[in-house]
Length: 266
Image 1 (spheres, helix red, strand yellow):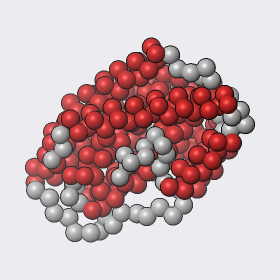
Image 2 (cartoon, rainbow, N blue to C red):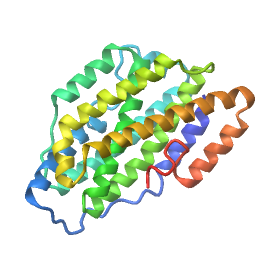
Image 3 (cartoon, one colour):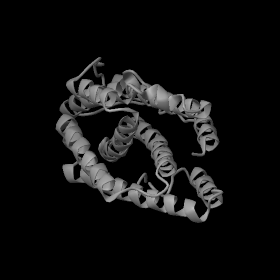
Image 4 (tube, helix red, strand yellow):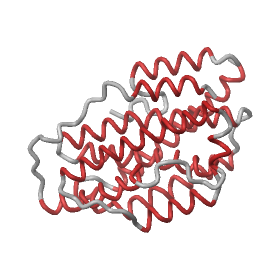
């Protein structure tokens, strides 16, 4: 696992971030505003608004495996807290009411805590892929530039979070992922996107989004992730010093997205 690369990335990514113009004039039909406010408030709680850290019972085993691992995890969650701050600004813009707990949030927390840190990180990876679909649908249909700009900022960050998980899994499974793991990964994604649609579908529909649009984002994202993960594992066998991987990461950082999300953030 190339921890120094990810430490540099997360630290550099905190710099020169363009804040959405939250003071811009705001107009939106009342029903659309009301449903969007409810959705954004719930997402603000889940995306760093709650206990923003690894919560699995054995989380310290992973964080304590190396000082660099602890640093990377802390920087990753610091970026999630930044997403929560941005979402809080969006909630205020649409005159929403902040929430402190929901059934979905409590269920998500319980699953993460009880099933161990490796499963927790897998769930967080899947949620990040699902979330990119949520933010893309909002960005496309919201009709409000500051909120669309917020979605773009978060999408840029999430693309690299997904890359981080790809590299973590590639280093942990040098012989590749099993067919059963890939099936479980896809089924977990389907479960998460259905859960999201049940909770946020009315808001997305009010904006003009469709269920098929959200689900298509998830499936493309998962397919791209599995393809890139397989490439990363195979390339490590023929390029043990990681020269090609470092070159690809440099190109991804320069372009603002990776092969996993190329063409999807646009």
